[in-house]
Image (cartoon, rainbow, N blue to C red; front, side, top):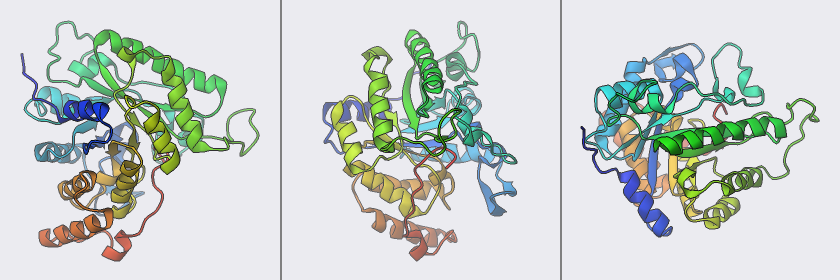
Length: 354
């Protein structure tokens, strides 16, 4: 039997739910891109081309996970089931760590981002799950005689709704089935909801027809979908695109037990990541889950160290960008962009394949 180290996620969530105005903020690194991008998931080798590579290996991807878990500044490490098997179950990486391991529990068709065709992300999302709760916990389909102490007890379930009753019913039915199974097995989850990925391309729908207010569309769907879910089956927190100041504040204020978290979207500039976190926190978000933004950084531990400083209110976003560039200079690492260019901002928090 392995004794689990107290997890910072559990301590912070309890304080946030008790007092939403507290200073706590939860950071997650999403190292589950191998469920989406294939060869490109681990990121480019220096000098590589985004379309052709060369790319880092899955072992290099996992080595970055080991480094960030050892650093201890993220609260959650989200992985594929195969990576979690190696790091959490076989190596016991999280046993003596305050970091919580988590596994992506479904891979809807809009994150099937293999290069070459690119058709899936443009088609209405369909539900699908490669892994199971038992496999996330112990690496086996049958967990009856397996050691579940090292594996994940937290998973991510993802929804993409497209304003089509038949498609969205299938997506929500898959979530219902997962929730029931998770409750029976004592498996916790957090809920990811993407913006619609194929508005105007749903069969029978007029081209370009879309909800008038996409932020309200997503927020209202979240609230409506969870209204029928008792406490035992509810997600620990949300992972959604940043919905802007007004809707984010309304969603955070609606039910303080429904903790709002934001996703990072594409890599963008360093200022994109830091300012997105700061803006979302200012309007009620208490979790940030950044995958590509961290993975594309010149030095991932330094990037996370400065991201944590922004999350904890120690520096503002622009100051953190400057400090990060100073850290790169001390390490002798050439930045991807000049400081001036890295202080620019663009919109990157959209769909997974955005």
